[in-house]
Image 1 (cartoon, rainbow, N blue to C red):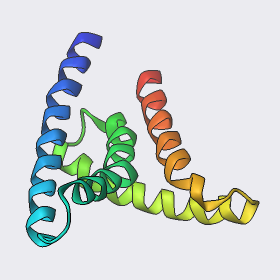
Image 2 (image 1 turned 180 degrees about the horizontal axis):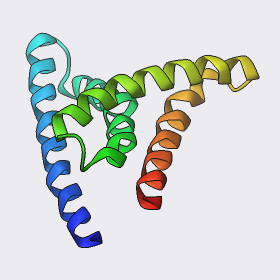
Image 3 (image 1 turned 90 degrees about the vertical axis):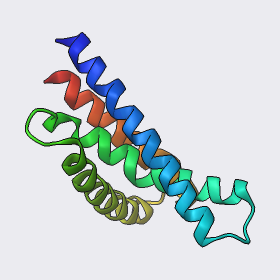
Image 4 (image 1 turned 180 degrees about the vertical axis):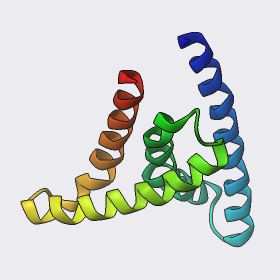
Length: 118
């Protein structure tokens, strides 16, 4: 079972990598006057904040939902959870400059932990 799940994760990581390259090309076309590295940093930050945590949270429903469905729902779920938790953690006193690192990483760890418990 674990080898099967690892192969599925490997196949889907190739899809996410292809999606990253597609987004990079689209963003480079849209922001043609910007440097390549600025566009790369922007696309990576979007993926870091929304796609990676959303995908890892939705790994739990691997058998029930298709990859595209899990990715779309995961991005929306990640945006909502990061937005709301960022607000409340900011009210609790954590400086906002740490939210972009801590919250996506915490969501990814949470999603992977729930998947491994299953």
